[in-house]
Each structure stands twice: as structure tokens, then as C-alpha cells.
Image: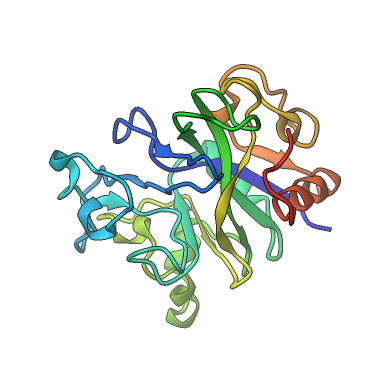
Length: 236
């Protein structure tokens, strides 16, 4: 049995001004946020990612903050994640190797949503990591030998000048970016479904889609069974 935390990532109406799209078949496009800090080496741009969506012309040369990185995603080699904010870092630092981190994003509904989708926009799990090692703080990273630093190589926070991660995660090869989104919203984007209100420790009240969601052993078992369903689409 393992514990888990789910955290919000990816493009939104604040950064860069739009959400990634959800398609009628349940597939989606993971769109990272722009890079907002100076970097010690060039970061890929929206144009470099060659995403299967139309990117506004004024954003194509904008560097992206490609975090989390998924090994099969453009311009990525490993499964890594970093965060400079204590609100997300604290629950992540409580995890251990073998525990799981789920990444969720707000996505725009297609023109004709299917019944399990939120009508306008909603919150969906888009991928997860199995932790290859215990999470490390930025300070702990500085003291790691080069052989152990390699697990985090390429992470967007390590490219920032200065490095600003409060937590760094490395995923095993049992990590993945999903092919299909798994809903955390109900009929409306602001309504949390049972994956939040029953299985996590969150009430689902207020802007729950911005908060880390903590899952104990039992709650995580339900969540993991759900995201690994062989049938699709999922149920609420």
C-alpha cells in the first residue's frame, strides 16, 4: 500500500492565458506554463514542443517551464518535477520512495462534451509518477554526488538561475503521461467528484482544484484502481 499526493500543473487562464484542450474521446494535450524566471541555459519554446494545437503567434518563441517532465514528451528525457512553493512542497516532502504523485490540470471541454465531462472546463488527472527515491529539498540536492543528481537532470527548476526548488522528485519508468484524462470534476468544473470528496482528505469546497490533494493508503487504492480502468470513458 502506498500514499499519494495530487497537485495542480499545466497551462491555465492566468499562464499563458488558455487551458489545454480535452477532446471528445477523452484524450488531451498537456500544455506547460511559460517560464517566468531567468535560466542558466535556454529553455524550449512553445514552438519547439510542436504541440498538436494552435499556439498564438506571439507565444511561439516564449520559453516554457516544462515541469513536470515526462520521458516521452517533447524536449524531455526523464520523469522529474520540482516546486519552489511550500504549499506544494510540504505534502510532497512527506512522501517516500515508492509512493505516488498524481498531476492534475484544468482542461477546456470540447464543443460537444460527452456525459462524463464537465460542461465548460474541468479538472482532470493527466499523469503520475512512482517515486524512484525519497523527495529531496533544494538544499539536499546541492549536497548530492553527481551520480545521484543525474536522476533530476533536465528539470526546469535546475535550469533557473538561481536554482529555486524547495522539493525535487524523480520518477521511475513506471511513471507516465496518460493517453486519456481522468476527471476530478463533476458536471461543472467547480464541482469536485468522489475522487476528491470521498477518497482524498480534501473537502472539495472552495477552489479545491488549486490545492494539493492528499490520499492515504485506502484512498490511494481507490484512486489508482480508477485511473487504471481498462474500460473508457470513466464514471463519475
